[in-house]
Length: 190
Image 1 (tube, rainbow, N blue to C red):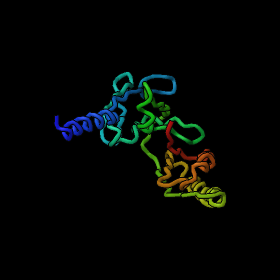
Image 2 (image 1 turned 120 degrees about the horizontal axis):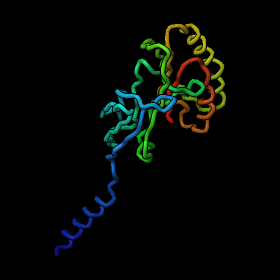
Image 3 (image 1 turned 180 degrees about the vertical axis):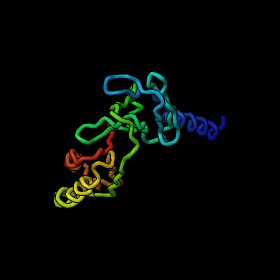
Image 4 (image 1 turned 135 degrees about the horizontal axis):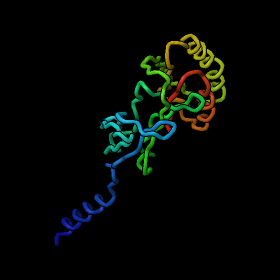
């Protein structure tokens, strides 16, 4: 056999053996705080969409090269279940593929509401203690004032976009703690 042909066959075999799986079948449930499944909730990975069945169950094929988060769209009759203002409506796909079930919990509203205010906060990029101090003493002061002025107009949802703590992940716990109890819901991964 020609050694170049043999080398080509072996190379092709080794490349295919090294290829990682990128297509996963994800599943989970969307339910109320008391465990009842919620039908008709939209679940997506940014590319593919599905809805929950009558029991609140969902399934979705996700290509990890394309989808980076699995998220739900909250129906007007429900609110995001939150812990000190930090709500969970998405799961990073890299975590979702490791779980047997990817579940979301919503809280039933007393009255149906589709009124909300969305506040986008762009690129805090805190690099050191000085910048964390500015975030806490300047930005959050202004943000609290804005949130207070919007109370009574429906739910207030805040989303921090972009670089949160630049290349200093050790500052993230301080950032996350500072976002609690601001009077608005800030989405976070479970």
